[in-house]
Image (cartoon, rainbow, N blue to C red; front, side):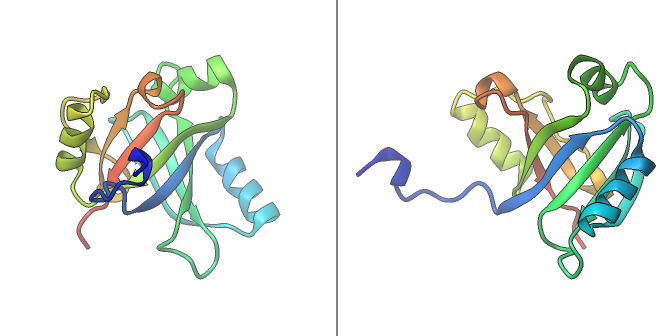
Length: 149
């Protein structure tokens, strides 16, 4: 049997969101609302990550895959540096996991590098970590364990 098709316990439970770096959060929210009908279901400032962010969803799909808009708090933040280097655009792909610590261990055991030794606080009380883009085909992969409701 092809290794890609082998029966394994799934690590990812869903695609959580796609992160897009933007220079101005309010302008970006208006753009996605006015052109695509997406609504901001959550807005917050995450000082630790150096961003002001918004999660956008299609009407009636508030638990589905989101668009996350990320605006830098300072030019020195990760998103500020990304915008300076690459301009606005796709910054990361986030996968939802049930247990971020177990997921991180599995990925490390598979030889992948994660950016943080321990998960950090993400949007709306979630826990997050990132797979190094060099280990994920050039894509910054975020792992998200949603906050308990």
